Amino acid sequence: MITASAPGKLILFGEHAVVYGEGAIATAVDKRARVTVCELDEKKIVVSSKNFGAPIDAPLKGETDHPAVRAAQAALEYAGQKVGIGIEIDSKLPIAAGMGSSAAISSATAAAVINLLTGTVPSLEISNVAYEGEKIAHGKPSGIDSSVATFGGTIFFQRGKITNLETGNLTLVVGDTGIQKSTKELVEKVRSTIEDPRVAHSMFSIGSLVKRAKTQMLEVGSPSKLGILMDQNHDFLRKLGVSSVKLEELVKAAKKAGAYGAKLTGAGGGGCIIALTDEPQEVIDALKAAGAKRAFTTKTNQEGVRIEG
Ligand code: PMV
Image (cartoon, rainbow, N blue to C red):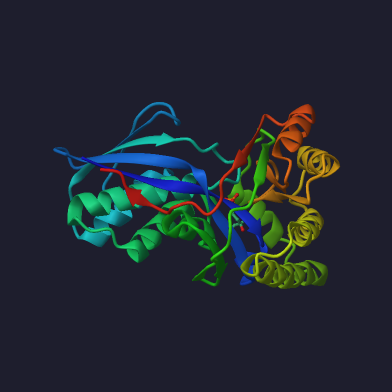
């Protein structure tokens, strides 16, 4: 039996534009998904979970709509083995909220199965296998979620290339609308408008804003400058049509409570906002008063996937 865990993530800058080859910045957070795997006598994959209801039986190969099943299938393929696998998931991440729950589950499953079968923890392969699992939730993901879940830290990601950003911890408050969204649908929604030159221009503008954010973060720049870039990034996301009434209310509440900057994080449509602040409690109170289902501070820059024992 092997247990692995992987962190959730927050996209600080550049979501959606990253799908079109622009850079984006994401950080691993202090909420994790834990996955325990064991070998089964029967040649099938069985997933049970504290988070997703009744156990699921799935074949070693073939169609599935479950990220952990897909990650386990890809891990079996990588290890060149055809054994039954039992998977138990315990995730502290809100589902479909933009905090990388499916990528964390996929990455932890990939690491646990690969470690069970080969005794190794090959990061790059784990990231590739996790990417297969993430496709279930995302369709054609950029790969930023599975990369940050696997490698951890704070990363700049562009066209599959990962640069680790050596940066300090940021005080971020997360406000969750409590509204689940489909990343696949939101990415498709944006894709349907990509021929519009204004949309293409927004993508380009987000890309250049991300470059400025990267410089700021590497130079441990001023939070107020980073905050301005967060606000600008949020404006572009709103123009892309991926914000919502509730997200706007939370962003406004965070700003009014004195946050340096605030933006939706992840695909949008629902899910979470992030706010950069020196006064986390004031922002948390304001977000709750504005109707956030939950609001909390989060540590950034956390460790990537790891074997727990
Ligand atoms: O999984 P989410 O909701 O954090 O969104 C992923 C970020 C997108 O840029 C919208 C999609 C992608 O594959 O990068």
